[in-house]
Image 1 (cartoon, helix red, strand yellow):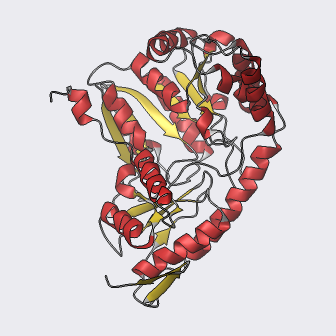
Image 2 (cartoon, rainbow, N blue to C red):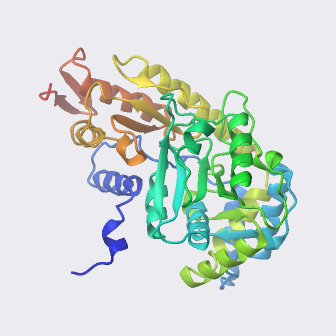
Image 3 (cartoon, rainbow, N blue to C red):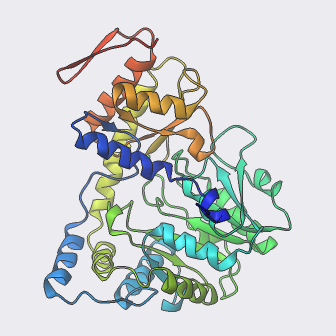
Length: 405
């Protein structure tokens, strides 16, 4: 079979593949604990569910504008004013089928083949493949001080005449690191000075812990005209636990939004009418659901850190936000893929290999699940890896005997 260069070069999404594998095992009755997902277990806001049901019951579910229905754009404008202190016009907004599509059409609108996109590592698994889908070159940048917090000087060293854009995701997937205000200010100023697009992937921007507050990138921008190359990405998936609704958006200059709309119109047309009205209700509704989710995730993070700190040799940096913990398990196996496969095979715990995020030896563990999932999942992992653990473990009525150490 003959495939295109792009078709041959794009890798499977590790996180989506893991979800599929875990679901298949569960369907077979296997006692899988999923510590790899990026999906809150809380229900979507009731306002969103009622709005979606109301439209379905009306029977008037039709095509929508390629850039989103007016009501959703109005809600996004209000959201941008409230959380970013920035007033934008409808022409500055595009609603997409998820924040992922918003990023994808932005990249397609700005990139030419062989141009480069820089992003700090560890990075979300899709950044590299999305850039390659545009025929461009992904350029991950590791902090030279070995932390999960990038510095401007680390990024400056990788900028070339081919650099077209920089992507910043804070709080970060997979590390949970919340980048400093100084770094955000520096990167905004740097991109304006170098005339480089800056894509702020803010999908987790309200899911931060320990009393920290979201950082507003617009506060440091000197150019707020229609020539600005600042692109802000957000959506309802994470903060409202509406992953399956697939609604995200981008705010940018009018010319870019127009080009993104044209591309999206030929890809998928407009986002679903049903999920758009649900997103409107979530954005405009009572926001206590977000506050409640933050409290739950912060508590889950603390529980997971306590359990991980009980491991000998595991190094886990306390996350500032999101629902991930990125821990160094290389003391047990240098290959994160081999380790993740072993944990799923032996003790039915699903985790994501760190190599998928650009860091070998690490595992991404999710705090999205219940306290029981977290405690039992880490207990199983410890039993599988720690030679000082008992040689037998019961999962339900099933007795496991460790014969691999």
